[in-house]
Length: 456
Image (cartoon, rainbow, N blue to C red; front, side, top):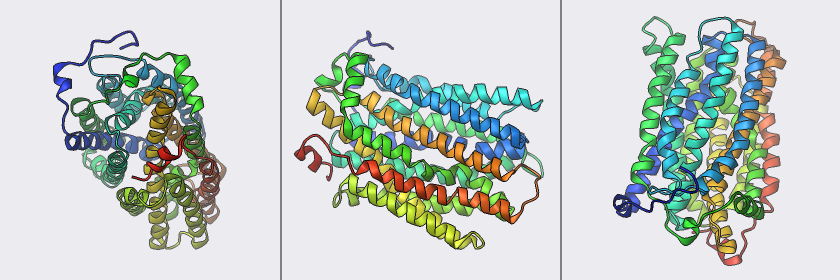
């Protein structure tokens, strides 16, 4: 699977499925992939604190491990994207990576929630190694999926709808994992209470199902055929066109600055335990996020017919900042009031997520028109790069908040501790959202007519 392999299309691949069939396949694949990502990002901290019984000091080390691993992993994203762009096989350049990444992601996901019951040093080494390998495997799983969306759906209107469906069903998978996984873990514990073994079994099940669905992208989606897509590319060409793509770089910078949008997801499960003494209360918080994400993901294509992605990105960032400040002022004493603001933050995040992917896809088309080079792999690697950096920063900041509050399993919950954690999931995201809006002010596609097509 290298840049020197070019077998040409097979007869089976020449019979491409219909656009509708490819849409169903890519949405199904994204749904399965998001089951796994949601499981890891939402529950890993809870699992390590409540079931693997990591101390405050160990959580500080875990925070460092996750942050360093994600930064290294994110840096590798452009390299993986470049490898994809230089690959030529009978299946295309993207689909082989979909096929061969599924098993490693499934296995390492299961191992993340199977920390051995031994001394803490061994546990930390085990977690660090597995998390690093999981991150690399997930890169080879994530980059080609988004590249397929940009390649298989070249018409902007259809592509916007496909992206919105992938994001919407990704949010639905978030709901299924958030609401259902604790219950599955309890059921598979085969005991009166949820156990570490129950979590291990439930996550292993999710990993197999998620990657099984993900493989639909290999079997039922085809890449775009074009002279630019068939051209052999070098690292130099790929990185030169990447840094020539100013609109893409603005999306990347604006996305990373908006890392605070992910803090509620990274720390929400821990916060509800601290604030309400009940892990199950995260069901309501998760439901609010999901409702907002699903509604706005389905609605965003219609909004894009009236306003540009740039305008919607700036508006969603400002709205997010206002919502988080209002949430802090309202407090968390009444969980139903909190739920209203959580839902509004989900709406802001949904608009951001759809516009982010469609703006990157448009920038890929734009740079192809201007330079004759189509670099789906390395360009969509910036999407996964930004997501990992955002997640890493969210985990890092929330980890710092936990350490500053001196929280660990069994510690006395005080109002000061609760307020410290609450500030971390409200005011920090507010500042982040405002900073995120700035780079999008400078997003411009290369030609006026190309910019006009951004509104299908």
